[in-house]
Amino acid sequence: MYDVIIIGAGVIGCAIARELARFDLKIAVVDRADDVSEGASKANSGIVHAGFDALPGSRKAYFNVHGHARMQSWASELHVPYKNNTSLVLALNEAEKPGLSELLARGLQNGVTGLRLIDRDDVLRREPLVNPAVQGALLAETAGIVSPYHLTIALAEHAAVNGVDFYLNCAVTGLDRADTGLFTLTTEGNPTSNAFGTPLQTRAIVNAAGIYADQINDYISLDTFKISARRGEYWMMDKQIGARFSATLFQLPTEKGKGVLVTPTVEDTLIIGPTNEAIADKTDTRTTREKLDEIRRVAARTCPSLPQDLYITAFSGLRAHCDRGDFIVGRATDVAGYYLAAGIESPGLTAAPAIALELAEQIATDLAAHHRNLFLAPLAPIFLGHGNDEVNLVALAEHIAEDPAYGRIVCRCEHVSEAAIRQAIRRPLGARSLDAIKRRTRANMGRCQGGFCTPRILEIMAEELSVDVTTLTKFGSQSDLLTGGRL
Ligand SMILES: Cc1cc2nc3c(=O)[nH]c(=O)nc-3n(C[C@H](O)[C@H](O)[C@H](O)COP(=O)(O)OP(=O)(O)OC[C@H]3O[C@@H](n4cnc5c(N)ncnc54)[C@H](O)[C@@H]3O)c2cc1C
Image (tube, rainbow, N blue to C red):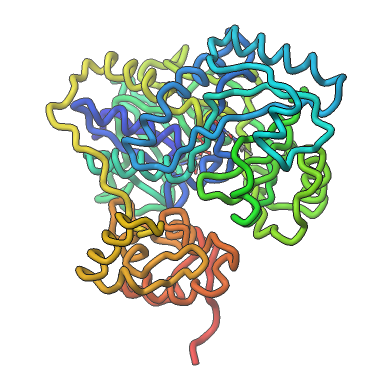
C-alpha cells in the first residue's frame, strides 16, 4: 500500500515524486511507457521561458515565473545541462514593433526581470545570422535552455535513490475510490504491478498523465475537462550551425502560440520549429513533409541564410491543450485525496519546479507527513569525458586506467564510450531500449543518427541484460529493431 501514487513519469510527475521523496511517505510512479520522459517531456523546445508570454493572473504565468526562478539551481544540483542563453523576440518589420512593447508590458506585469527593448544593431551584433531586415527585439536576459529529457531522467533517478518505486510499462486503465478513502488502480502491462494478485493501492493519487489526464480524471471525478493533442514538429540541425547561435530567437507570437523559433540546444545542435496542429489521434507523433517544409519557410524569415545541407533529423511532440485554457494544478474540487497537474502545455517544462513544490507541499500537509532525516544527494552523472581541457583529459585518463571501456568509443559522432553505455544500463531506472540509451548518453543523436553505432549498442545491451539481441526494441513494445533469423 502506498501513501501516494503519481500517474505519469514526465517531467511533472518525476518532479513531484522527487519533491515528495523528501517526506516520510511511501511513493510510486506509474507510466505506460517503457522509460521515463517518453511523452511531451522528451520532445519539446527545451526553452526555460522568462515568463513574458503567459497571460497575467493565469496559473501559467505564476508557475512559469516561479519555476524559472528555480530551474538553474535544480539543473546544477541534478548535473543537468543548462545555459542562460537569453532570448530575443524579433520585430521583422516596423509594423511588428508595437507588439514588442505589449510583450514587455505583459512581462513586467508577470514580474519578469531583465527584459528590455533593443535596436537593430544590437540584435545583429548578438546574432549575426538574423534577418538583416530586423527592426529591433525584446531581449529577455534571464531566458535559458535545458535538456528536457536529462532533467526528467535526473529527477526520476533522484526520486528512485530516495526510495520512490517506478512501475514502467504499466498503463492505468481504471481507478476506484473506496468509502475508506483508499484508491485502487487497475493496470495493464507490467506484471509487477499486480504481483501476488494485489492491485496497486494508495491513500493519495496524482494525475500527471499529460495528454491522457482527461481520461484519468474521468475515472474518478465529475469535474471534467477535455485535453486535446496539438502536434509540434521540428527540424534538428547539425552542431556546425548550432554553434553559431547563442540566443533563442522567436518571431512575434500569434493567437496560435509562440510560433516557429530558432534555438541552439544545450548540446549546440540547432532546432527549428515547432508547428501547432490539432490532431485527433493522441498516438500520432509523425512528422510530415508538409509541416517540415512550412517550418523551413517560416524560419527563413528569422534567418534567411540557414544552410540547406545540415538537417540531421526531424521529430515531433504533442502538447496537452486543455479546454479550460490554463494549467489545472492542486487538490481536486470533488474527490478528497486526488490531485491534478493537468493541461500542462508550454511552458510546463519551465514551470515544473514550481508545480512540484506546490503539489508536494499540499499533499504532505494533507497526509500529515514530516520531512525525512535522510535525503540522499543526486547521483553523479554518467562520465562522458568530453572536452579537450586539461582537467577533462586527466579525468579521462584516470577513468581509462580503471576501466579500458572508457577508451573504446562506440558512437563516433558524439564520442560516447562503451563504459558510458554500460553505465546507462546499470543505473537506477537503467536504459532498456535504444532510445533510453540515446537520451542518457547521446549515442545515436549525432550526424549519422545511429547508422554506425546501433549494432554495437545492441550487442552491449544484450550482454548487460542477458537477453537475445532480437528482443531489444527502440522504445518498448511494438518497436522491434531486428526481425528474421541470424546467419
Ligand atoms: C512541441 C512542444 C514544445 C514545447 N516547448 C516547451 C518549451 O520550450 N518550454 C517549456 O517550458 N515547455 C515546453 N513545452 C511543454 C512541456 O514539454 C510540457 O509542459 C511538459 O513536458 C509536460 O510534462 P508532463 O509530465 O505533464 O507530460 P508528459 O511528459 O507527456 O508525461 C505524461 C506521462 O503520462 C503517461 N501516461 C499517460 N496516460 C497514462 C496512463 N493511463 N497510465 C500510465 N501512464 C500514463 C505518459 O506515458 C507520459 O509519460 C512544449 C511542449 C511541446 C509538445
